[in-house]
Length: 159
Image 1 (tube, rainbow, N blue to C red):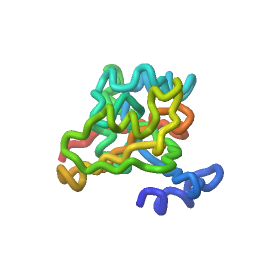
Image 2 (image 1 turned 180 degrees about the horizontal axis):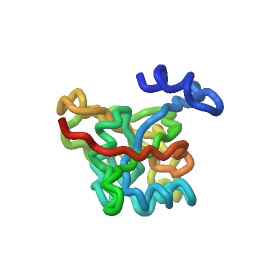
Image 3 (image 1 turned 90 degrees about the vertical axis):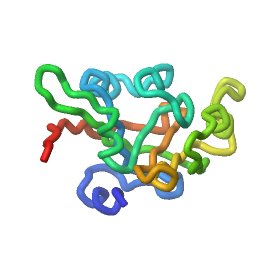
Image 4 (image 1 turned 180 degrees about the vertical axis):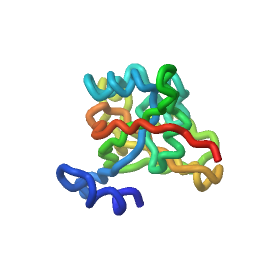
C-alpha cells in the first residue's frame, strides 16, 4: 500500500492507525489546490465539478492515476495538480455497487443528522476495483477529516 512506500520518507508524525488514517491523493485544478492549502477543503463545493457517486463529500484515492482523472492542466504551464492528503477514515461504509445510492452513503455517515456527521460510519470506501476493475476511492463528509499535506505538480507524459 501507499503508506508502506511513503511513510518512512515523509516528514511529520506517523499515521494514526487507530483512527484508520491514510495517505490518499486528491485531484484538482491548480487554483483550487492553492485555495485548499491556504483555507482548507470546502464541503459546500463538494461534487460541483465531478459529481457525487458516493455522496456530497470530499473524494480521495489510493492511486494517483485515479486522482489524475480529476486533475486539470494549468493553462499557462501545462502542469497538472494533485494533493497528497492525510485522511482520517475511521469506520468505513464499504460498497462495491456499480451505482451506489449516494443518499444512503451520506445517511450512514450521518450527513444532515442534527446538522453534523453523527452516523455509524465516518467515510465511504467505493470499491471500483471490484465492480469496475479500476481503483478504490474514498469519500469523507467532514473537512476536518482531510488535511492537504503536499501539492504535487506534474506533467502527463504520453508514451
